[in-house]
Image (cartoon, rainbow, N blue to C red):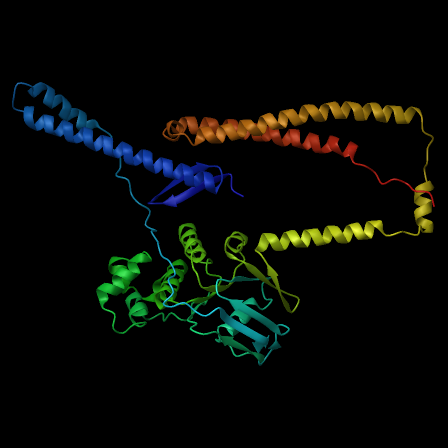
Length: 429
């Protein structure tokens, strides 16, 4: 959605034109330029200081003093800083499960006080399957996942795990974390034989370093708790992951790391998410929870939408081809206000011809403007422009002007194109 991104990092705001992909490219280039500029200046400073040391009391004293003044006036390039978020992890199975990982038979999730939330769910999860639970808020996705994880008892039916299955369950409310415990406690409790240096090394993988490991869990942000919960699942070596909104509290870098880790995971996954990109990248099947039922579809979210659109088109086509018996109001509408053809038809035809010529002109103009915007985006990504704030502003202003012109041309094109929309043909009874 974005056409401009302002990053909040390292105590400052930095603006980037374009969408997220453009931001990533520009940020990488900006960081490269800064590292190079810093290294070149450090090298120049070291050479100059060495010259001053060797010549301040010799024959070139005047030159040495001049260079000392130069260094004193020199505007120093800040040392490049790395973003504090540096999360790298992967899910490794302690052991491989059997082919049949999880099977539910006529499973009815719900609560004793409120009753069943869904009709009986019967499904078989095999090794390597990645099933997304998809549906509106409050439809029962989280309750179903908790029932599959055996955190909740079913109203009726059963859940069975296959041979060698180790379950890793991520609760979006993170109820498994004790607010009064430290980060070290949260990891060392999983294995009493673990030594503190080992626990520290493990937590560092999830960007918990130094004295941070002694923080109370209750003082952590939502994103930090999310990373800690994922760390505990990774530590357990699960081969079946049941994840409830795992990306909710994570920043973009941590989300990308999580996506990469789950994509490379060889076990089975059942997860709840409202993130279409995440579902598209990860899911091999979608269990759609809707109107009190759960229906399994092959593919990801885009596949589900595509099939739904094709079904709606087929339904509309079938309705359109069905014979229609005209009513009295239909006949009145068709006959009301009929005017003789002739001069009016010729005037309308001339108007259409003129509009057709203008449409061709507009299409050429629109194509040129779109190409111009692409060229401006490419120019913005070049190192020479990134280093000059004035040029960036000028190019952004030019791009904004072209976009406004493009919007105006598109509006004119849409208005004229309505003249060429085919009207339904009248048929004689």
